[in-house]
Figure 1 (cartoon, rainbow, N blue to C red):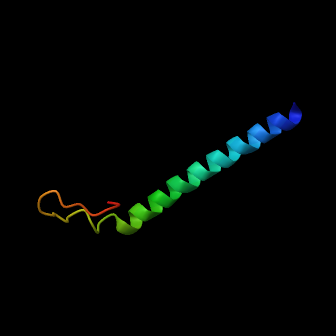
Figure 2 (tube, rainbow, N blue to C red; figure 1 turned 60 degrees about the vertical axis):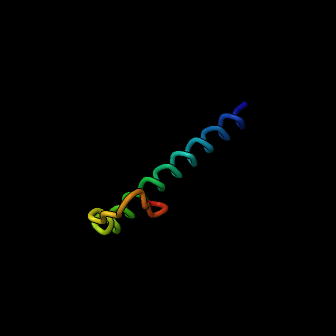
Length: 51
C-alpha cells in the first residue's frame, strides 16, 4: 500500500515537472520567435506547418 502511494506520488511529480518544462520551453520559444512571424501576411489559406 505504501509502495503504491509512493509510486503514485512519483508519477504525479514527474508529470508536473514535465508539464512545467514544456511550458518553460514554450515561453522561451516565444521569446525567440515572437516578433519574427507576427507581421507575415500570407495570401489565401497558405499556412506554414507548426505556426
